[in-house]
Image (tube, rainbow, N blue to C red; front, top):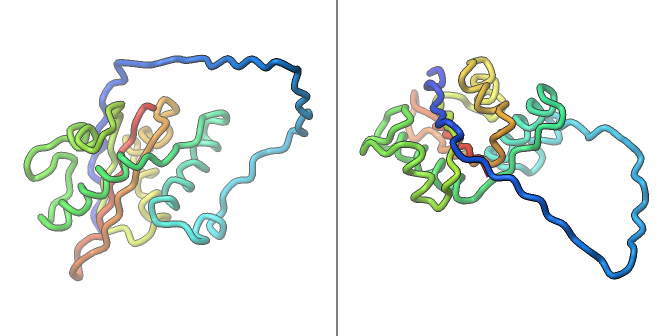
Length: 179
């Protein structure tokens, strides 16, 4: 089993802050919610009907909530998912593991080409059979773990491509974005 390739992170050079205000013509009564802790995903709830990508994201959101209470959960972005999936497909078809493609495209090039511009970081891996395995592998590596637990990162996409022959893959790419 191959260890995950080292993480790639681009410095967050631009941050955007916004406030949305809404006004109503008549007062609105909102019931006061009772404070209850958010349920933490378990293996059973994560795997029920979820794709490998959504399972990875759910497991990482549980890790983020545990490590940094108040950190917003990662949301799946279709453009980032497209870039990640295409990179995993490229790694499988050309039998390599790396952040830059065989044609030297960076993770940021690929995400921008897919339509996502607030690019942040990437994790890649090969040889892990399940979402639980790949998340454990990434969480055991300081750089990959830092990408996952970075609360400035808000969006993600996971590309999973199964092995096409014995002794290879499966191939995993997780790209991250700041908005």
